Image (cartoon, rainbow, N blue to C red; front, side, top):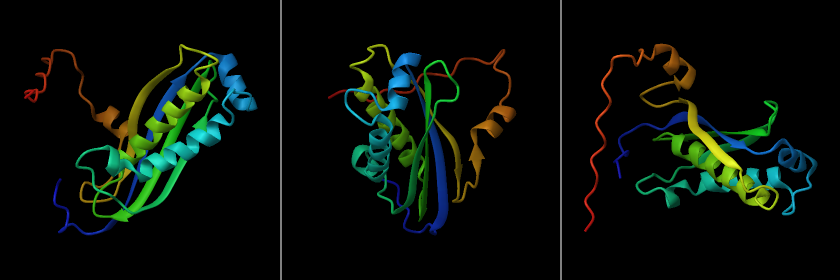
Amino acid sequence: MVDVSAKPETAREAVARAIVKMKPATLGAVRRGNAPKGDVLGTARTAGILAAKRTSELIPLCHPLRLTNVDVTFDDRRGNGTLEIEARVRTIDKTGVEMEALTAVTVAALTVYDMVKALEKGVTIANVQLLAKSGGKSGTWTRDAERRRAPSRTGHPRPKPAARTPLP
């Protein structure tokens, strides 16, 4: 675990998103509250919040943080059975809340999957990603700003694969 004892406490925030793809009819049942297991979005929201609070128990070497806010929201305006899940996590602490936001959207997406699998077997979870983070020494980062700065990939060599930890 990284020693953060010398770092100052600062306001920090992270926003993450996950996409759950399903048939429009399945998403319609979710919207109407007609899923066999009950209130899909309410249950997924609660699961995401609880997951953010327990991130340090799930991810090795992740610091336990005093979260000041976790907000999990859903957007189905894209149509075609696409449900966007977004989590915004805040703290005033010594390290960032990126892992908490990513854990929140991932567990919320898994909860949606679990609650609609009786209606549809082909549900997919995609594009789990950090959208933005702020606070701390590194300041503010957004995925949109990163995309605008990214150089063209044409002509660049492939990155080397990561080293593997040998099995005992």
